[in-house]
Length: 103
Image 1 (cartoon, rainbow, N blue to C red):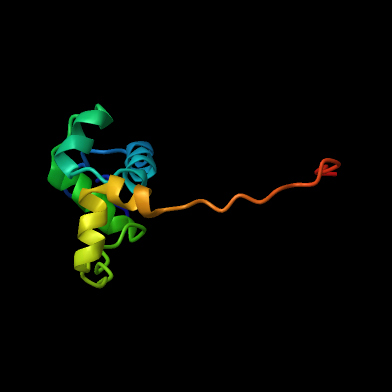
Image 2: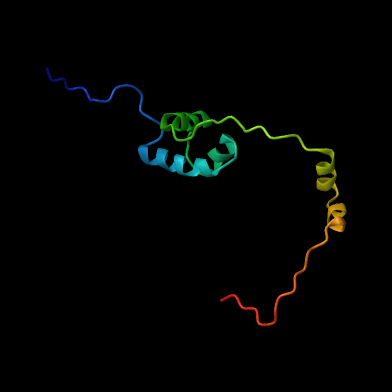
C-alpha cells in the first residue's frame, strides 16, 4: 500500500547534520559551559539543543573526576610563597668540556 505522505514524521530538527558535526567539532576542545559555547557557535539554537546533540552522538561522555591527594602544608607555603622555594633551590652546574658538540 503506497501513501502520498512524506516518509518523515514528527517535528523537524533545529540543526542539520552539518551543524551537528560542527557542534561536535567545537565542543570537545572547549572546557567552557554550554551557554558560552552557544554564543561562539553562531547558531540560533538553545543550550538544551546543544546538549541533546552531545547525548545523541555518544562521543562526549561525562566522566567522574579523578581524586587526588590533599596538599600538604609545605606544598601550600611553596605555592603561596615561591620565593622561599627559589632561595632554598641551588642549581647544579656541571662543567662541559671545551670540545663539546651535540653531533
